[in-house]
Every structure is written in C-alpha cells, then in structure tokens.
Image (cartoon, rainbow, N blue to C red):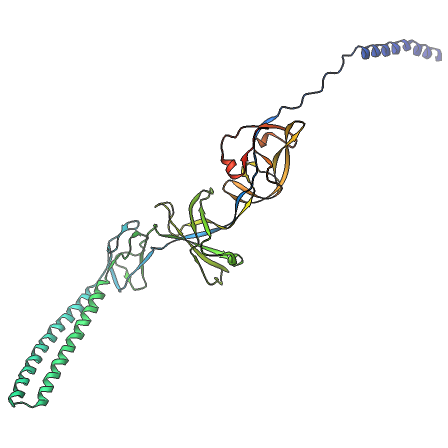
Amino acid sequence: MQMCVTHAVRRTRPHWAVLALFCLVAACTAPPPGPPPSPPPATPVEFVALEASPVERVSEFVGTLKSRRSTTIQAQAEGFLVRILVSSGERVTPGTPMFEIDASAQRALVSSLEAQQVAREADIAFARQQAERATQLVAAGAMSQQELDQATTSLKTAEAQLQVIEQQIRQQEVELGYYAVVAQTAGVVGDVPVRPGDRVTRTTVLTTVDDNVGLEAYLNIPVQQAPSLRVGLPVRLVDDGGEVLADTHISFVAASVDHQTQSVLVKAPVNVRPGLLRADQFVRAHVVWSVDSGLSVAVRAVQRVNDQRFVFVAEESDGGLVARQRAVVLGPVIGDAYVVLDGLTEGDLVVVSGTQKIGDGAPIQMLPPQSSADSVSAGRPAEAQ
C-alpha cells in the first residue's frame, strides 16, 4: 500500500515542473507596460477676478404704504340715508356729490326761521315809523324825550332780533348743506359699507377716497437700531424677486418709541407710476445704513453643503489651472451678489459658471463670459490664462 502511494506522487512531479516552466516562459514573453493614463481634460468654466467695490450695509423691513391723500368720508348730519350717488372704484373730484341724507326736518326748520325773519322785518318797519314820529313830536314839543327814547329802544331791539334770526338762518342753511355729502379731495372711492335706508350719525363711516399718487412707506424700526436713524437715509422698495420698485429716503423719524412694539416709526415718500403700488399694501423695504468698500461674489458661484458655503477658486498648478474649494463667510444678498465677510481676498479668481461639472482639484480652463452682469456685481472678468 505504501509503495503505491509513493509511486503516484512520483508520477505527478513532472506535471508540476512543466507548469512552472510554462509560467516562466509566459512571464518572459509578456508585453511591456504601456504609458500612464492621460489626465482628464480641463473643464471650460467662467470665472471673475474679485475687486473691491462699494458695498451697502442694508437691513430689510416690512412696511405699509399709506396715502397722503386718503380721506375718510363721514356724515356731518344725522338721519336716514336716501341716495348713494357713487360706487366703489369710481374716481371722483372735489365737490362730486356722493351721498344724500333725508333733510326734510332741516328744511322745515329753515323755512320756520325764514318766516320769523319776515315778522322781524315787519316789526323793524313799524318801530322805525314810531321812532321817526316821536322825533317829530319831540321837536314840536308835543311828546316828551322819554317817549322818544322808548321808541328808539324798540327800534334797536327789533333790529337786534332780526340779526339773531338771520344768524340762525345762516347756521341752519350750513347744517342743511351737510345732508348732501360731497367729495373733499380727488381720488378713488373705496368700500361703501352703508345702504339706502340706513340711519347714519356723525360717527358713521360712509366710505374712503384714496389717491395713490401721494404714497408714504411706514416702517417700524426696532429700538435697538434707532440710534442709527436719521432723515435722509436711503430706502429701497423691492418686490418678492428683489427687483427695485422705488428709490426714496427717510423723511420723518418719530421722536418717541411705540411702547407696545418697542419700535420707532419712520416715513419715506414713494413716487411711482400709477397702478404699480397701492395704499395699505405691504412692501419689502431695504434701509441702507452705510456704503463701505468691500468684496461681493455672485450668488450663482456659491455652493452649499449642510450649513457651510463655499466657492471654487481658480489656482495655478503645473502650468495650468485647477479649481480649489474654499469655505466662505457671506453677508446679505445685494442685487444678485453676496457680501463677502471672510474667506476671499481681492484678486481671487472665483468660478461663476460650470461649478456643477467640477470638483476640488479638477483642471479647468477659461470660458469667455457671455454677459457683464457678474463683472458689475462680483468683480471684473478674469483674463484668459
């Protein structure tokens, strides 16, 4: 049994030798290794060279537009509303009839006073005749001076009573005019909450008349920022997309603080084309506190990973350019650019397009800019390397 196994092992030895010889021959005849793989091609990108430019320190607030020509129409007389002569949205001019209140009782009062006026005029005519007759009789010695004095007093009393009646008539005629409500200013009629047949008083609001030509922005500035407030500070109204609607300035700063909101009221006049803004509209307002020299970088150049923001900066490497990822600290957005607080210096070449195609250390090449928007907001276009 032992002899058979030994013989089998011995028979397999030539096979192992042949295999080793075959491997040695294969190794000697293998082709030489090829050249190293070529580096990836440079990605064309657009970048700009950062340079210092005026940078605004801005705070954003929500303001309310108020009309400087807004009028609340209220009745100056009490009674039942007879007619409504205007409708909501209608444009009126000063003197346009708007409402009519039942004035029958007031007209009756004026008529009664006018009748009393006629009676007092008759009393004056009679008293004047008596005084003239008494004067003649006293001159002839047929009447005493005392009787003349009484006739003269009666004439003056009648004249005074007539003046009182005339004053009452004028007053009641003015009151009668209040029963016809007219527009005091030009503008557009607002909501009309009353209806014919309603009883109105002097506190009843009939409608409003607003003119959007003269608008003011009302801003409530927190008291912590109040020391920086002053008349003349620039204010910029913007829409939801950041587009500027109007440039203005602070024209009024309240002397006291609102104890409920702990804010200071400021006003800024707003002059825009008709229909762009309306009274009682909420607007976004940027208050420009100061303008300093600083750096800004285009919004589209900024990448964000978690809570960290970074940009790609072009740097020289082995005779070419590579993109290096650099963390930055940014301030508010002004226009289409961030204010740079830290992480970049003047002259850095910041990649502003093609950032989604590159990574840290990727080779890049200059792509000519197609617009000058970035050069305005975030430096000048870099020259091709």
